[in-house]
Amino acid sequence: MEFRRVIISLLLLIFVMSILQSEDLLIRLDRPEQHLISWLEENKLSDRITYSRDVLEILADPEIIEYLADCHIEYEVLKSETDIIRDLENYRSYDEMYADLLNFSETYPEITSLSTLGPSMCHQYYLDGNDNYADFQHEIWCLKVSDNPELEEDEPNVFFASLIHARETISLEVVMTFMEEFFADYSSDPEIAEFVENNQIWFIPLINPDGYKLVHDELHLYHRKNMRDNNENGLPDNSSDDGVDMNRNFGYVWGPNGTSSDPGSPLYNGPEAWSELEVQYLRDLIQSRKFWAGVTYHSQGEWVLYPLGNLPGVCSYDHEIMGDLATEMALTIPRISSAGHYTPAQAVNFGYTCQGTMGDWSYSEERVFGYTIELANQYIPNDPVPICEDNLEAFRVMLHRLDNRVLTGHVTDPWGTPLVAAVNVIQVDEQAGMTEVEPYRSGAIFGRYFRPLLTGEYDVEFICEGYETELYENLWVSEGGATEQDAILYPTWWGEHDKGDVDDNGSIDAFDASVLMRYIVGWDPAPYAPLPWEAWRLVIADATLDGELDSYDCSLILQYVVGIINEF
Image (tube, rainbow, N blue to C red; front, top):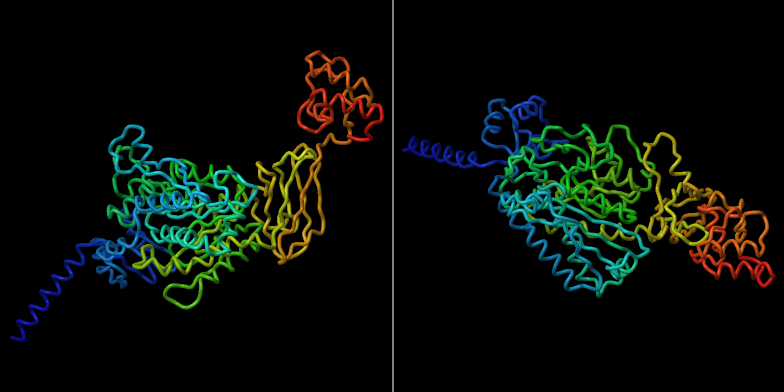
């Protein structure tokens, strides 16, 4: 009888194990050996590595489990495929996300503007006539929040984006939770009302809807990339054969480090920089406005990262300033299953470096404080709610950063025209040993600049081609609020030509008014001021400073000549 019980127990155990091994298992190895990683790569199974830093996590199929057993490699089972599919029920789909965004915009039309940045890669295939992609009609949605959302205002721009990697589902929920809490409290929370009044806030919650469809619809549970048709078979392959890692496709030092040129790799960086539509949309949005900062949410690891991180040894000019804000945010986010808070770090110290990332591009080319927050300790946590709630305070910390310790103002020419000028903070931008990046520049629309700094005294140069450089010394930046410093830049020819001296002979007289009138009515004013008129002559002839040349300018010159006015 006892023998029969043993036999039955063994048969039951074998039956259970056969069921478990018929589905994938998410496993963790504490100290992975290189031969395992090499074996995965040789057998084209490296796309099943879901996490590789201090530990190795693998979505293991029966072939991998058998190899581990043969090599006597120990591992911990984190989840079964059934567990992952069950957990996905706690995450909204693309359609549910869009319905929520639409509801926000319809419920709060006075502070929101919902727009599409453009169709996803697969949607574009469908629009180009490929019906195999009929189920991928996705847009990259963007919700702007401001007190005048349809206008472009002279206010700081900041973005919150998520799910550039398809399997990082928790990132979508975090950004959507921000919006839910934001709108729920808008009418009763003065702090949120102040955020809306003083900022232009941009939410891009689902950068990679095509790849996310594979994950959420259980077609390829740990897909990372978008769905570019790499093998050009005209079909969604629902595997790593398709897709580009979009966070390796940005154009700043696009290259081989931390990436792959193999289209089947989860780290494939694309056929060229900026090849992906979704990446182009993000670039165009950031370049079209003067963003001072933004956060892109990822998972996993519980880090708050800031640029740079493309090659070993890099270091950003603003690393102390960005690190200060990273620390402030990190200290508000508790770890989900251990003591302490998220870890702030410059991305180069994250454990590996990689090229072509959004954070490095946005800082290096546009001088945006581009943060990456690595959420949670797994890609698809079984309960996203606590993680979402734990990140709400850091969201507010980011929006409060420009309340103090910031240098801001406008850069214009003498007639008030905004200038795109380099704003060179000498104590920051001329540090030795830093990685060369583009200078910080004022915005094109308003000439506005925002330079977050640490408390201290700074010397600042305003530099624009064709204009004299202006230097302001000993500007004090403090906890007490923003330090305002406007800069007026004068053309390099300023001082060489006098306002009103249209014929440029060193004397302002009635003949200048006559020369100008000849120009206005279309007569050739040569030889006194031969056509075409140079930019400086057009400026000194504009005595009324209204940007137009007309009889009023002639009248003002004559008033100066006869002594009615003493200056222009």
